[in-house]
Image (cartoon, rainbow, N blue to C red; front, side, top):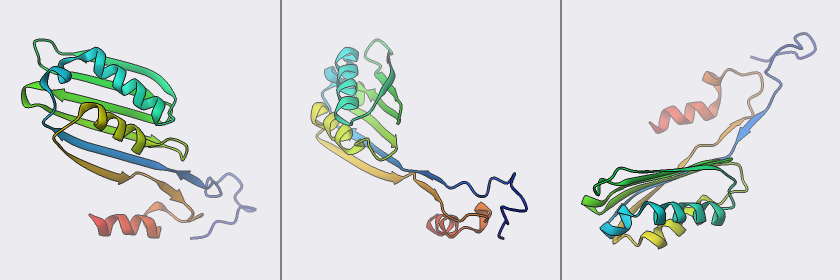
Length: 153
């Protein structure tokens, strides 16, 4: 379907929309139990990761669940977020670093946190959360990019 902009100036179809989204996430095993309980140290690590990743900090919140039950640190950044959750009793943590835009370095932030936590083993995954609407005048259902998403499921 093609929309004639001259005949229909109110349509949104002329707007091109693009998002560069990089999502790194992982499971970290064999981390020192005492480090996974240290909410102040974990917050400092995430805060430094924001700086290393060339991100803009909006806020950082830390929850210490007490009695060795783990810590969560979530940094809201202008580009999206970093989330670290710990389970000291299992020497385990999960980490998400998600950025939008091309200026941030989620790999640098993720790798810095790995270096500081020193897991014995880890799994690191990447999801491309980007979107490019270059199919002006087409519905989302008919764009080749969306067709590729369906095939990847």
